[in-house]
Length: 123
Image (tube, rainbow, N blue to C red; front, side, top):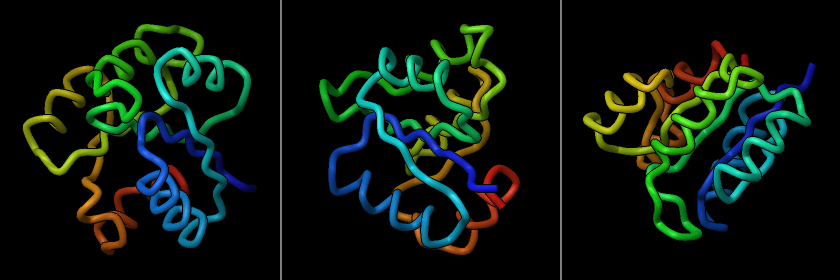
């Protein structure tokens, strides 16, 4: 069964790189959201298997950690796994403390360890 991934807050080129990588590597479809409002709407409407949140949202450079906090605070969608996309381990740890699972950075997008990280959710 095709999995669904929601990408939140990435610019066009980064979204397309993530979408291409995920859809090429897994039986998955990647949807896009710009911020917490449309992300929560999509999460309530669609069956999403994994949320990927950019550390800084492209639309206004707000903190992606706030998106994770809103997802985890919403009982209807809080069980959906969320990952922060950042190359900085300290930001990964902050996201984990808010209920996210360990994510990855854009610099490691096509690496085997990123595939292994995503497999439990998309494999």
